[in-house]
Image 1 (cartoon, helix red, strand yellow):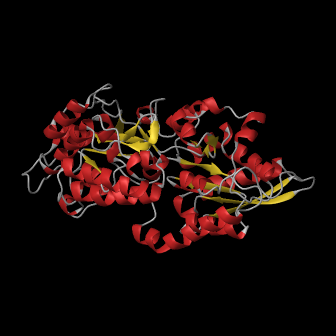
Image 2 (cartoon, one colour):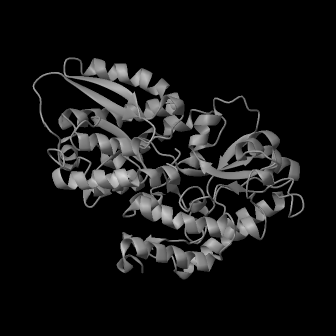
Image 3 (tube, helix red, strand yellow):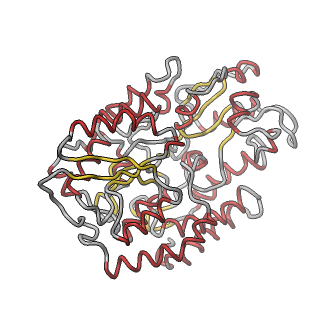
Length: 444
């Protein structure tokens, strides 16, 4: 899912700061731990803010919502509203005004940002008295939604990074397909053999991935190569200048700038997007992308013979990166008990299976993985399944996540996108930027 632009965030920063200050001074009844009314004896009407119809969400909601309303007829009537543009800021404003939705789908850095502002209902008391099987969720995403010792969200689905390859390019060049347990060294060797054409204008690119930000697709290769941006036990302590980060990021940087195995832009691909170059032109042999691509491609009329390989293993493992998508109850929700019922149903095994089959989205529940792997017969979707080692992008759990991520990415782009800074100098500037926002105690 796309992130808010930097321009939008800067334009709304003052509004958000004012909203947070207002909540701190006179937050909604119940604050972080509850809503205005915890119980009700009669039927209630609730509103759900969820993914938009433009994201292909409507087919799921068209099936799921009537079943929910029928099941809870006379108790709860739920209405679906597509999240508005700039929904994070609008959710903040609605909480301040005392008119939030009763349940909201949240992603990325917003979990910690809203939790820091005491804008989410803690769910621990509901979890303890419910039949929720938390062990069924992919642990990396479920645990990441426990912030400051409180569970503030339940996973909706997951989008994990995967490696896709075009069989036709491999066959044409005569390179063996990716092995079941291959390494980053083998990935490098394979990409070199697949790449065709002079350095300044490749005809075929061996590998492709987005690298415009530090924590999206590129992080799987960085993590795999041994990068670790934070103390493993403390996401509030940053370690950008560690030697392991310099080595890992230099390895990835070389793929783009020295070895020229990865296109730097659409211009390098003859004006084609990564998808078009991979699926249509056959000028990209492998890409690292999210599993959401499977949901997109299964409805496209493409004849490309693509499949999935497992992410290659490096000194830091496979570098499995998860999205941070889930449901939360905003502070000030009118009937938080009823809201919890909605959250339970939206994250149930049945709902996970329905998303997999209707939308092609990878379930957050491990028990429903098989339903997803069957959605595209003939494709090795099992290679896109996360293990218990998978973890969310680090920015999702950083303190002052939006400010820190924006500041770090300004430097990151000078290293990877424009090649203005060396890897070592860039990491030093990232560490300094973090210290400037969070204080020197945050920089190890």
